[in-house]
Image 1 (spheres, rainbow, N blue to C red):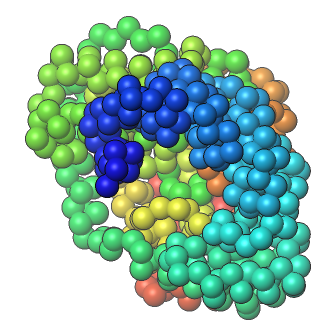
Image 2 (image 1 turned 180 degrees about the vertical axis):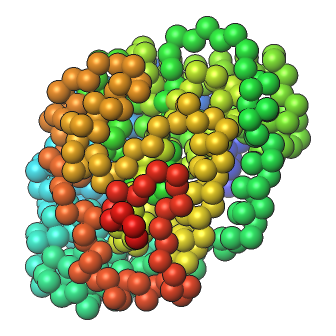
Length: 497
């Protein structure tokens, strides 16, 4: 194995210091070694040193002008620096130097979707599909199907089937079935659509670790036991904060992105998106120090450690160049950490985003969530997960109620101005009509809903599953209707039911 191969292997294993040593040794021998510069640029990206990454990757691209990967990395670096126009120029350059490579159009379309250029993204996807078949072709079809299912005709569906038969990649097969499900739905063939949705879920479930309802409930009970009202109150101390953390929590596909985008039109509100900062960084650091996993690592936290973790979160906010009064984090799974978050940030606020179970479950069932969570592709497990979430949220409402606001998706879509006025009043900010103009901006939006939130409110989302209701309910072996047991009335259910 030569030096560059060894360095790349170390980088793939996340052994950054060893990889850096080898890359630098190559540069000492040859300052024009483009692959070594590319490697150092990737290391800088991993370390979130984006200006340094741009410098190194630009030099790599100069020495490897026809190689796409350094250009892709440079575009990512400019995006990280919040310079999307530079990233767009680089990706368009890639399309010029590799006009028959479907991946360049796929990456350009992804960028355009994130920044709200929906029609341009559609054109890029179609240009990518006009290229020779590539391992990204199935993903091009998936994005186009979910952007505009009617854009895929019978001939393209036949091509999709051919690509599906030709791939051995298990994740690509899952993506293909979701794309076929959405495409057949666009053609009005509901039998074929549902069959492919179900196949997609079954195949994806095989790729996920088993979800144990018993283990999850034990985890939830442990959280309830530790984070009672006394514990939360005892952890409060004087906190001089430059911003108020706001966490939108809930289930997958609950409408959190829609709410986030509405609130972010307010001049006092900005968002971190769904970055897993609290668990992946703060709790991971605390677990390493204490030798205990969450939630046990929080049991005897010191004042000094609280200060350190707070600063770590503030540093993440600073990296994103956010200087607003309210900083949103919309990672839905943060519902598990509400007690721990309150212990670290007494001023934190939480929005419990609720959506009726079956419409939410149907949205999970028909979308590729690109996760290894079995409850996202097995409806019985999703029901178990929902019940654990609902049980824990009741606990938080009883023990940290003044910090939690319940927002129903149905209320937000049916009477958006009324819902937003109430929520803004709770946040102690003055409602602005710009909140309803959320779809007319080009701020970055990641996640599955990035195209949906570029459109005016769609009132039929909760009725989508009704077209498949009988077949869909058959996916729930327990056969029980799941309704929220939340203290507030579920607006999707008539009173008395």
